[in-house]
Structures are given as structure tokens and as C-alpha cells.
Amino acid sequence: MTIFCSHCHRPLQAEMSCLPRRGKQAPSGSKPFRSTKSASKARRDQINAELQALRSLLPISAREKERLSYLHTMALVCLRLRGAQLFPPDSAPPAGPALGAELLSLLPGFLLVLSANGKLVYISENVAQVLGLSVVELLAQGDTVFDILDGRACEDARKKLLLAQEEPGREVTFVSEMRTSKAFRLQHGGNRAVAVHGRFTALRWPASSTTAAFLALCTPVTQLPADGDAGSQDDLFQSTHILDMTFTDVTESVTYHLGYRREELIGQSWYSLLHPEDADLAAAQHRAVALGAGAGTAVLRLLRGDQTWAWLHVSARRDGGGHAITCTSRCLREEEAAYLRARQHRHTPRTTAPPPPDAAPPPPPPPPVAGRELSLLAAQLRALADSLSPPAAAPAWAWPLPEAEAFPPWPVS
Image (cartoon, rainbow, N blue to C red; front, side):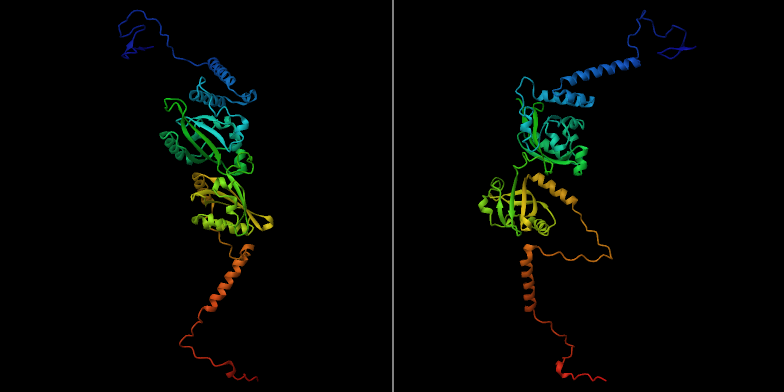
């Protein structure tokens, strides 16, 4: 067998080399590592033991620890480490994580704390009431807020977070659909839109990117029937109207939202507070409710007492045996109103499918009860206009017709 030199690649005899010998060298200790089955098992056992030790240190119940996978364990450990970096153990405990379950249940949403680069630091336990996912299940989606947001809104969220970071203390709001459980999507047809409203706050001085956190309250944009009543009535007020939308009653909370006393609104028309650009949309919903088409919803602007406009999500239904309309109005931020209007525009069909050629034309809908007087007045005005209009002139080539009596009776044979 021919042996080649490892330096010049020339054939050599056994135990020879073209390089000068520097004495007898000890054999090299860095041998190529060769993994064996027993070595791989030993490494896996070591990793499992370390993960079990970390899992035992988590401040959760023993039942929850048994359900944690290794991925969920690492996600929770990383969340705790980021929280310990922002809230050192020797400092005062933050207000968010110290909140009890009773106090969290009174909030209209869940609390969220982010680091300067968007990493999740804290999520309150009541997130399951809004998204249907626990904190552990939500962390399995990723460790940043962008992993739990809809992909189309990530760019807007980045811009708002950057703006808030450049101006600490400035409150920003962005609306996005957040990931939900499979059961939630099957029941409600998709993920849930959530408004994130918060600001960057320096937790320690001097302020830096490692000592600043984004503290936010995440509230659902639209309320669902399954939502609890706790914390959801603060931004609502109800009003009762006759069929022409004249106020007959309104809750006292309207003073907080619109700045009017209850006595000021009773007897006034709801349309007197409506923004002119929203009149067509409001009239269409009003007509549908008056015709008995069920509840109608719309995003509209009403005039406050201080002459500013308030965005409201108005849900109207016909009550009182069909003689009254009840409206439930919920105040919205401008970002929430823009999101709801854009979604309504996407879901509204642009064209109506034509009826089949052999189908009979549908009968005209009956006029609403409140509009009978208007229909009668319109008919009278139309008759008056016809009576005042001059008769049509006869063409110049037409011969004058004699009186009917001038024609003798036609002889009958």
C-alpha cells in the first residue's frame, strides 16, 4: 500500500515524512467526535432533567405543569426571564402582574406588556376570556406581539410602536385581528379584532431601551353575546325613540359620553345630532328597522355638547310591540371606527345578482307605519303639481274635432 505525505502529497515509505521531525510528539487529544446511541440518550436525559427543573420553578399549579410540553415550558421561562429583566426582584413589583383575578375580571380587556423590540413580557390571565386561548397557548404562537397579530396589521403596529418609543408617554392605538382558538373561529367565523391602546413608560432611570416597556390595554372592538357584562357597560348608553327617531328616553350615562342632560334630549330628533355625511347610512338602517328587517347596526358620528364629534357603534331594534325603536350606542376610538367601516365596506356586496328571467317581479314593500303620513302628503303634492301644470298643447297639424253631439248615430243595418 502506498502512503502519501500529508504535506506535499508525495509517495513515502512507512513512518516517513518530508517535514523535519521535531521529536516525538504526543498524540493529539482532539479526535473527531463520533456520536453514539448511548451518548445521544445521555444528552437527551440531561436536557429533559434541566427542563423539568425549570418547569418546577414556574409559579403555576402542579396540574398546569403536568400539561406543559417542552416548547411551552421554554416559552414560559423566556417570558419570566424578560419580565425579571424589566422588573428586577429587588425592585417594587409592577402593578400589572400583581393584579388579582377579581380585579382583572372587571377590565373590559386584557393587559399586555411589551419590551422595546416587541417581545412579550406579560399577558394577564383574563386573555382567555377575549381570545379563547390561555397565556401558555398564546405563547406557543411566538414570543413577539407580531406573532399573535394578523399579518396585514403588523406593519401598522410597528409604525405605532416606533412612534410611541420615539415619544415616551404618548398614547397610541392600533387595531388588528388577534389569533384565537379553533373553537372561537368556528363559532364566530374568524379571529377577533382587538384595539391595543398604550404607551411606553420608563420603569427605571436612566431611561433606555432596556428599562422601557410598552404598557397597553387590549379591548375587543365588537362585543359578542358570550361576553360578560362586567366592564362592558361603561362605554354604552341606551336610548328609546318613536318610529321617527324622536327621543322618548335615554340613560343617564349619555351625559358622560355626549355631554347632554337627559332632559335636553327628550323630545328632540336623533337626526339633529347626526353628522351630515352619515345621514344616508343612518336613513337606510332606520328604514330597514322600521320595515321589520331585524336589528340594524352602523358606525356613525353624533354631535357632542362641546361641538365635537363622537364615533358610535349604534345597534337599533324595534321594540314595544313595534311602536318604538331602542338604540344601544357604544363609544369608539377613531381607529376602531375606521376598522369597522373598512370591514363593513369589504363585506358589503358591490353588485346585486339579477333575478332569473322567468321570475315574477317582487311586490313593492308596504310603507312603514311611521311613514304613512309622509306617503299621503307626497301623493297630495303630486296631485297638486299635476293640477297646476298646463295642459299639453295640440300639434299644429291636428284637425279640430267637432263636438260629440255633431256626429249622427251610425245607421244599423
